[in-house]
Image (cartoon, rainbow, N blue to C red; front, side, top):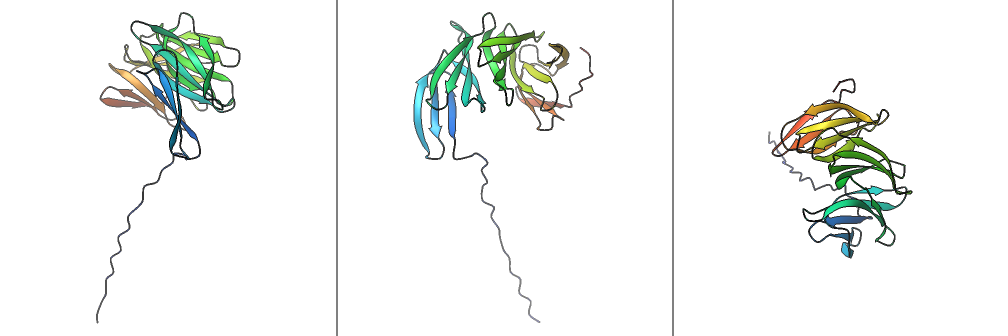
Length: 219
């Protein structure tokens, strides 16, 4: 009895999740500019100047705007954020953050006109109302070199990485104070949170540290 074996090789094609019907905003630190690409047409639309050395950026979908932090340089310290209109691709407003210098990490509070920002000098966590231009909250992280931040998806907590202190500050957004300090080691820089809020990843230079948020932990 003759048996025939047929071997079938299936090659999986790459699957991309980036939408191709939207614009991509690229922050250029050294040239102090922002480049806008049309992902659907696959071409550059415009490049325009910003304040000195922009660093991080977030979107406000309900207001159809992009917000960028103006970090500055060693010779010219930044102290503002720029609001970019997505229709005209122009800066429509600049908000001065006063004594909170070198603003770096930035996130948006979904379905509001507010954003959260941390400053590298002063190490402040701020809530800024983009519509009014006012800093509604300013909470000290109690650490040095506050860098990036994430918001818990279901609870009123913000988590700030502190690159100089090698830690993460857990900030209670109801009590407006630091709830806990979690030490992760020198160079704690990047930070991310899972969609369900069950894990937080603190990225150090060369390695990552993962932990489960414990909101009852004391300082």
